[in-house]
Length: 444
Image (cartoon, rainbow, N blue to C red; front, side, top):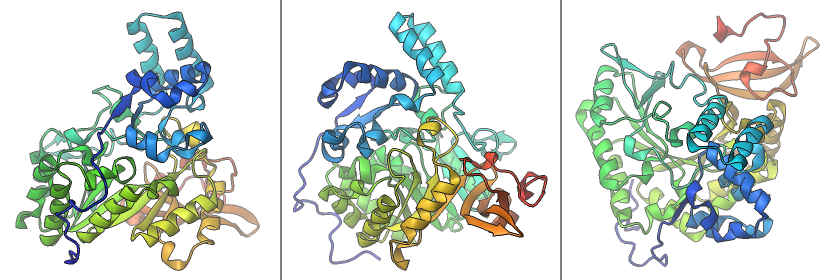
């Protein structure tokens, strides 16, 4: 319910001045003043990586979130600025040599394309197995992996306020139409939902749908509020805006309309869940970020927080404990700790599964029960979301205990299983079944 004591349509009394949304991409790399203090060799390395993986950062992140005295180790700097180790040495050297040699742009583009192709641009069957069909035709811009939930990628939301260096959807942002997931018309989503009454949740994702003007987002979401789509009970919006541009909810020219849209969704009897991506507690510190959280919560919408465990950024139990505790204090529900996906710069960010579970467990030990709602560490793998539940010994065999918390096949959901202990494994396909089994149950 909307809190009547908070006027969500009036920001005239807020202390936050309107800020210009200045953005830097790879082409404006040398225009960022703070980077000029770094050694030229380091800046060249960053340009090499930014030619392969997408780079985009805005002034708010630069000014408010990064501690430039701690660069390059600062976690938010690692989160947003390219680092040499994000490419395998052979890939980095190949692109760097081509750039030093000044090869023709067409040849450089071909080299970059070959490197990208080696980075598993669409993991977990996103393009092959997740795209649904209607009347025998595939529907671009939709994904339907789990029975109850459909993902919707509106075309005008397939960019972000800033890009995360670890992003598993990096291929959305490199300008290759063959790699991009985007829906041109909302009508395709509506037609699919009419044919699939089992769908209870629609997740609007990207990119970041909150880069869209509110009028465009409203055009996507308002049709779902009609009685025709009564079976759609929850609307989810996946976003990093609460970190990268909280002004979206507070001082942008259509911020009040966005908040009003959230109220309208709730008033129509739908549950609105804002799935906010957080990677470090520092993202919650700025006053305007906290004001944005207050305004969203005042509409009755629920904010759930999720993010991956990442080397160089948050592979520390104390960081997660402080993150979860701060989220709870601000009224956010800790939702997921993910394992870094097997794509893009995975080798730079990945943490062995055993160590991931140890970090999760040690972080949980530092918070009270009310902050222990985050599930994980969870791998969003091809068969489904697989949670690492721990290391144990059964009949003298040391094993990893796992659980399928979401699955392509609904019969798999909540099914436990076991893998041989492997302290180096970083993804599901690195694991082997325990107890002499030849295959995991989902491989049959």
